[in-house]
Image (tube, rainbow over all chains, first blue to last red; front, side):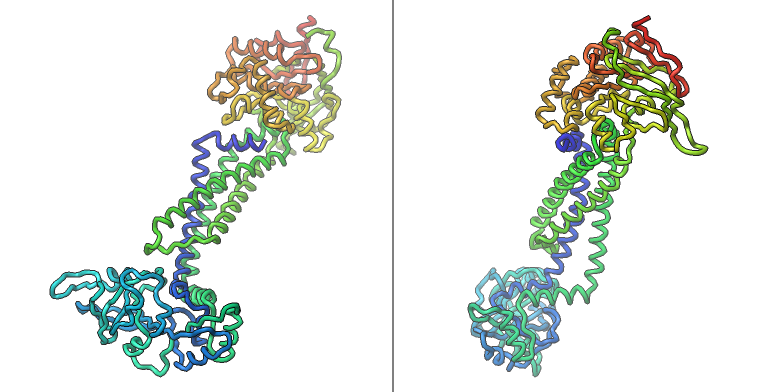
Length: 386
Length: 237
């Protein structure tokens, strides 16, 4: 009878397409909103993931997220290097400074200073030039996306109109002249200010003088050692916080979610998407089952037990949910692929489809449960009514 | 059918009553029905609308519980059976031809006919094969893959009859099988019922108010206001 149930479901093409389209739409609402939320929160950890050469991030214990600058004394670097299990450790500088472009446009940028010797912690992908060019005098690297956006020459120069910043252009960072020697690609971040890379020592020279200037120490643990064990040793020896990239990313994400109100604001959108999805799919399923009520009553008269009718209805519901969910997730994934690396924050890991699937199945089962009550209470004698 | 074959009782009703609702809203649909239906016979239940015909066949077919009285069908008091056992009993022993046919519009003729077998647990392939044979017997074997909407009213009626007979029930209950058909088609349907459905081991009960088909009956029970007023046996008269 399960095959008969499925034939009943797909037999009326228009109704079937309508039902599946409704479920696909509900899935789309749920998974797309969920993916955008996931994308947003994930972007808060983009820089940490892009800076993947080290096993551990060592920072002041009061640092809450990637843009929270609470610098350490330079001596922290030496202390970390002295901890057993640390293979190498390098300094990393990060701070906001004011930049002035050739045309006078002033922009606040995030300046990241890399270890002069190794350039560890640099951007994940170079587009123009190489990372080594940072060793040239006054050199900086700029983001290939920023040159046409935040770092665009909006007023133009004496000889040219507004244009993208390009290799060879001069940029004043905190009144210190620098030269663009290359461009890089990075993962889009939650924060929007342009990013420039330079060396650690140059960054210190350009930044306002401070007694504490070391933002982070990036450390690699010796092969075969558990980074978390070494992190605990570093914390004990230095009284600083040492975390793996994943741990720091999670901490940043939690802080941003807690402080910015994204969770309740975006959560409302997700809940709304879920509720609309549930109502749309539930209503369509309910109507479908009610429309087949007479057929179920006839089967009941012909000897079908309530259990058999339940199995039939649940088979129909789960089949429709499966197809609708597949289409919905497919469209969500297609949209995500099309808009990949755009301003739309979109990330569909395994959690969104799994929780979206559970949500769709649950709402379908709720709709089925409500409508099946009428089928179960159905008097088979109604089939004798014309 | 002859008198010689009509010797065993398929349905025995004594003082059967059925009341719908309670208190001031109670409606007494059956008021003490006494009726015997014999195996091998075609019995017509006739009477005006609202006289209790449909209620009576619902009680006989085991889909409504009587309020009082005694009713044994094929030797079984179906009211005494639990719901699930009664449903299984219906599935094995009763075939239905509904007034509105109740064919599933999205299933083919063969699939519609196969439903009673599938309910009984027959595997899909076997059920469809038996359904095809049954459709041959009712004369529309070439339309097995057609949907009900692609068939005429008479052909749909044949599907309904094939569905009622495919699992070889011992009791066939037909509710107004000719009411929506013209005289010629209605006549053909009754001929088909007599030809295909009738047999010494099966009882046929047909509810109708169509006097044009009275001639097909072995026994006619005239009902009015919840009673069986009189029983005629036209073939014996």
